[in-house]
Each structure stands twice: as C-alpha cells, then as structure tokens.
Length: 172
Length: 168
Image (cartoon, rainbow over the protein chains, first blue to last red):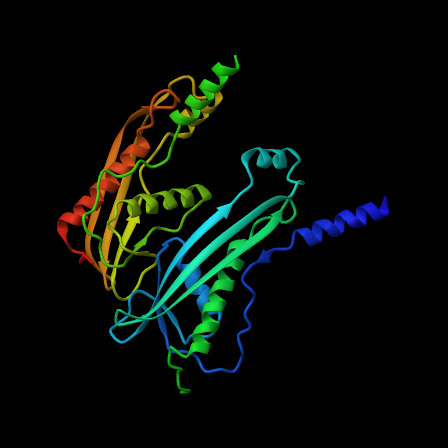
C-alpha cells in the first residue's frame, strides 16, 4: 500500500513537470548593454508582457514601445499561438473527479522577430516553443504562458548579443 | 425524446450566442503599424470580449499591425466600451430562475468611445451610443452584441472618412 502511494505520488510529481521544446538559454553577466530598442508586438493584449520579458533578459539598455525616431533600432514581433486543450468530454470527466484527473495542456508558439533600422530589415529571427504539462487540481496552468514566452525572449536576446547586429552601449 | 432535447440544446446555445458579429466594414487599404489600447480588463469575461474586439478589428483588414500600449511616437487608438447599462439584477435573477423561458423586458444602453492619438497628442475623439428594449429569453435574438459591432463598424468608417491615419 505504502509503495503504491509513493509510486503514485512520484508519478504525479514527475508527470506534472512543465516541459519546453526550446532549451533555456544562459545569458552571461557582466556584458555591456545593447543599445535601446523600440519593440512593436502584433498582439495588443500581450504586447506589454512581451516587452517586459525582453526587459527581464537584462541585455538591452531599454525596451520602449512604439516606432521610434529615425535612426533608432526597432523590433517587430509577430506571434502565432496555438493552445491545445483536451477534448470536451475529458474536461467534463476531470471536472467530475474534482480535477484529480490530470489533463494534458500545451501552448505552441511560433514567434518571428524582425530587427530593423529606418524601415530596413537587418535580420530576422524565428523561434518555436511548445510548452506542455499535465495540469490537475493542485497544479494549475498558471505560469505556463509566461514560461513559454520568456524562453523565446531569452533565446532572442542571446542570439542578438552573439550576432553583434546591435551596437553595444559604451559605459557612461 | 433525445432528438427534442438535442434540438432545444442547440437552440438554447445558438440563441444565446454573445459573440461579436463581423463588422459591416471592409478596408481597402491598411493603416501604418499603430497601437490599439483598451482599458484594463476587470474580469476573465472582459478579457475574452477584448480578444473578440481585436479579432473583428483585425478582420476588417484596416490594420497592418496592431500593437498595444501607449507610445511617444506613432498613432494609437483607444477603444473604450465601458459605461452603459445592461439587464439589472432583477431581470437577470428572474431570467435565471425561469431558465430564460419567461420574457422579462429590460432596456439597455451600450457606449463606445474612441480616441485617436498621434505622438501622445489627442487628434480626435469619437463617441457612439446605442440603446433599446430586449428581453431575457433564449428565443428572442440578443440585440446587444449586434449594437456593439454596429458601433465598432461606425468607428472604423469614421476613421476611414477622416483620413487622419496614413496608409501603408
């Protein structure tokens, strides 16, 4: 009996871990900031979150909204988000068991970043991240979308830093 | 018996549809990238409604790129659907108790405020209002969502007519 309980507890804990297809990127400390960027996101309801995630990477001097003045660097972001929920009968079944039955949920995001200066495209980046988890009563879906977007933002920040397309800000 | 209950189920669900109808406006040219801002949603329901509004605006083809938030440079459109009134507590409770079978009439009023900014400066503001009678039943089509899309369509036509936003 004890063994069974331990086993099911282990399965629940391990099975409920969130998985991402895009690996977590390490952003090195102690590097100079990159020049400020103006970020436009083609999704008004998630634009603020996206900009904040780029700010959190700590790679850019500042991340501002809008088009920017001539000469400024701007980033246009387009995302395609697909949410995958289990079929409705399964949702009902989970509700009937008071959400003790785990449900498989996933968010599949493809994001395109277009780095521009004065309307001229400098470089394009494209990332896809599929975040998947089994959610149940004590472990909801909260934070999944954040994790999904934050990995993409970090991947973009690391690639931009590595490519050297944006000039580094000189220490003041 | 099963067929009847299925039919009533379908009728109930489709009669009570609150989804926004597509706007009766199609743009010929798209505006330059700009932002569309809405007041912070108060509930999950609000959030869902805002998502629908963005989708119907996108479907008109008037926007090439819709960003969110205010910015120091560029154009932004504030879309505010707050204000107005719907069914009060009494019709809603009575409607729920009678499972929306007894028509309880009520008046409603819907508002839409639009404000167009350029570089943070107000260029022009727009205000629309719709109201009328309806009843809390599933067999009378809801007029409220239709008046919302009506007003959004009118806002889009007025924006097109005023030509304040440059085209791409």
